[in-house]
Length: 517
Image (tube, rainbow, N blue to C red):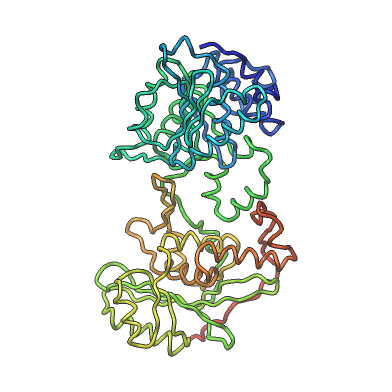
């Protein structure tokens, strides 16, 4: 291997790679790239290096594995593309390749679409360089044939396709979101095992980047073993929040994410691994939504009430529950979900009698003829309610998705609960579980219950997002913008990030106490 120019020189020259990571916002990435290929740092750069890696000194040679764990929008894919372009166009690998053999800079992602993004970055970097633009000799949808005897290729992660090549770089993007189960034939470990020998001849770099997910898999294992000063000097581990590696990302984006869902934002933007199981709703957040001393509310003329039933069969451990609520606009123009009443029938019970009791409450007391239910019991539940003239429509989302979509109501103080201890305890007892693909699943703890919590969040979601899912939240955001005198169509990249939901002083007292017997 012979460098035709150093990484430092290439990143400083606008005719080479100086345009790829320009300005102060990319300084940290430039320092990491320079050190990763074995070049020395200045004293000033070494101070930043310590903050990023926890190590006192940079490696004096090209690293074997470079692991970057960082938040979303931190520039990981672009930095990987820069490293790929450098190693495939500005380094001569002739002495490590056999006659007629071509090297490969292989960039791997969980999906072909993600891999294509990295290739687009690499192609753009080469074409924007006056020195490198002529090095592209051929191009396909997934590869670039380059003049230095190296091809730059992208592919989706598959251990079967990872064998048989001589690589100068293996880039594994978003590796924490590959399959990590031991019983998976295409697990993250199998992919790394299949790819690593491809670098043995050239001594090239394996660069692994990802936003953090659960505390499992190859990403977490490498971090645990090699992060900080005690790690192998040839194994470079960097863990950083988005703002450290991309200072240009508006702070409002990050602040809003933390306000809506702190646990998810800590992973998505904070660069922290997620606990495998974590509390979903902090008790302080739930308690702040409770109208103390109000065990239920009376029917009021002019309100339009909604209801959700969480059915059960009557023979197991689950209760059959009912939640009734309405929507109110407060003096500040904010839409608030008001939970009015809860009903629970604990097992054992006759499900037909339970339906009759709930219909008596719905029709006789609240005048409600349409409800939503979960998917329990297939067609039995809608038909059972239909006998009493109540239309039961299955919810379009799962119970877990319902919890996730209802979460912003709690964090932005847009839901008011009645003072019902069992339902409060169930909401506080919900647990967020992170699967191998990084998707949240919310459920009750082992031997716990969430029947009342499910009914509350389902009716709240129904009232807050009538169009269903993300469409309801987009409509909500547009209404909030217009209420504040802001054009919702002001630009495609705003993400409504400057809008804040605040608690207003003098919020009205919602509902009335039932008269005591």
